[in-house]
Image: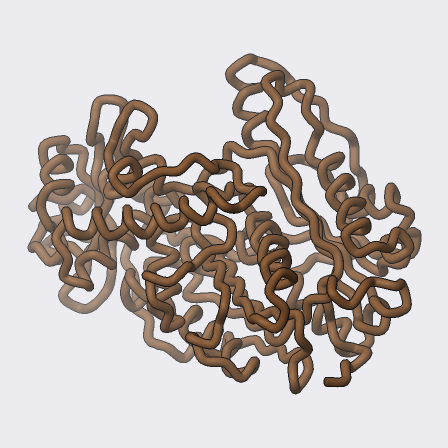
Length: 489
């Protein structure tokens, strides 16, 4: 098949990690980004390709650099490159790839470099050791912002202090359990088996942060090293951000890849990309166990690529928590029994905040290079199952060229519901989690539906009730909220 010279292709991939006992001796994120970009250039076989970049994008991280992309561009000799930044969100890597791929297809760009890095492990150790880590200056303002900030915490959620993923994703998990009609024990066992399959992939992934084999019983069973966090999740079911990891990608036109001498076997074509977000506030979702944006935008990516779910040879579903994987698999029509990750996910592969998907893409690239002609899907998720991006890749070119579409209008047309901050009276418990402390259950957070269909939230500090909620099914029970955000059953 002839290749359109404007076809966007990934040609350079690299990921790296560091494990230092003394956090002050490790590389800072900026240096890790530079190292990753330089290595991606070597992977493509062309230093000149780096110098020819017309944009360098740094994925927003847990650091205070003002314009790290500009500093990276200067260090690699990309003198004409614009600098780009992103908002927070696990979706931004794939969203940025989609953005630059569309630019390349339209002839607006030729070479785009993306990079990101986090040192969560070193930062955690530095806090414990009271060590101040040195960070370079990277002054200035990026020339471009890819994507925009989205307020994702409703005042009703804020009032109940439901602002962290470690509380909200377990609430999604409980809703999944209730919607499937599973018992607490059966559900826990199934999710642990799912996560054990992710662990098995990590064991075989040379870049994974945790490669120790773990079975489902170990993942599901609380222990001193695997404490309960937000019911029903143990620590080993949560994203692992205590990692020092960096990655880089080089995306360019097929013409540029040929001009700079990138060997054809290094090329990975983008077949299709889509983006959309669910209601910015969880409070307005029609239910807590599905995602219209994943269903519509993910399904549309498959349609644009001319594929059915079973045509995908490899999949990397965004995996911050098991609920995110289950919702995505359900909406995309993928069996939970098939491999759903190429990295091991954010628990075992490693969860460097917003930059995980770059590691997923780099690993997907390695897998597809090793299996010419096969096809892979990468999904990305930001917020509370809120912002989504999709990309389909192969070593073979697409028949119709790269296809991109925003699916927001179709998602916005799906049903939603109103929310209320305060409520005094009866309500039906919709879903919940129980947050644990060192001594056991401490409080319950719960979503409730009112008689008029609106949603509200309430908490309980009754530790006996919270403990019971980990043993018995409380979804669907009648409750009373006292007008100050406290519920009783």
